[in-house]
Length: 320
Image 1 (tube, helix red, strand yellow):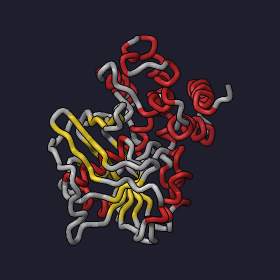
Image 2: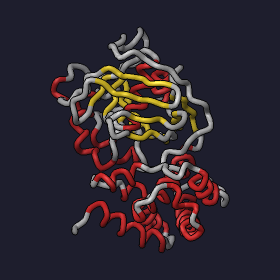
Image 3: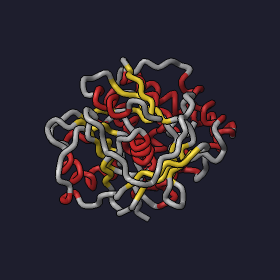
Image 4: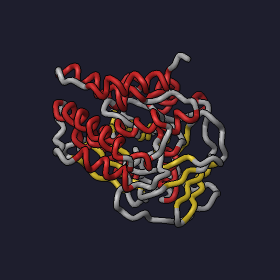
């Protein structure tokens, strides 16, 4: 299945007007979205559709964001802010939707938007979200998440959502503000009592999706028996590391993940493949390198990772 797994919940489809709307109603948390890419645009559209248009912060000035699916189109009014110095107030909640390779560039936004009480919900890959993001905040809670929706940036800059949007969150006091912000929106949420297992389950899926970078192919490649066999060997290796990290995942998980990729649309991609094709830095370390690193710390051999990771690193970082 693609990197952002398709969940079975049906999407609630609607069309919102392009003009600006009331940002919040009394009692709603104030919200900013940092990183209006595919994931950030989906969250911003969900909030706007519910009448809670967030402050949108990014690298490029834009007058609006646009999300579409099979049933409708949502236009989120901007502007996209590009200068942290122009922000006058902190907010209650920041959805951080930049990739791990963009964290340093996003640091000025976190400084401008965060007070000691601001919750930062990280919409990012990996199992190291808290430790990576905390140094850039003002001391407030950093809330990891698992993003379960296939959103893709289109050539015209809009975002296509191919299935329902869903977030999995840990059971912490900070989770309440995210639930309040997203209540009644097209982005559903669930609280995982065992968030470690949920996060590692998604990481296994992200890790094997990295093979698409090495082939330059999309999900259809997993219908090859040789690629399926390689994927299973890699996933079983990742599974052993995940269990050593405290994840409770059954022996059936590797096959389930491969079956998901095999049944996905043949043209379904993944964010790390899109980055490779665009010549952008790759999130190879948080998606793949972490398996090797954590495996070494537990004394677990990771022979497939030891081959895949240097190739991904070279594809992303060079030289050459």
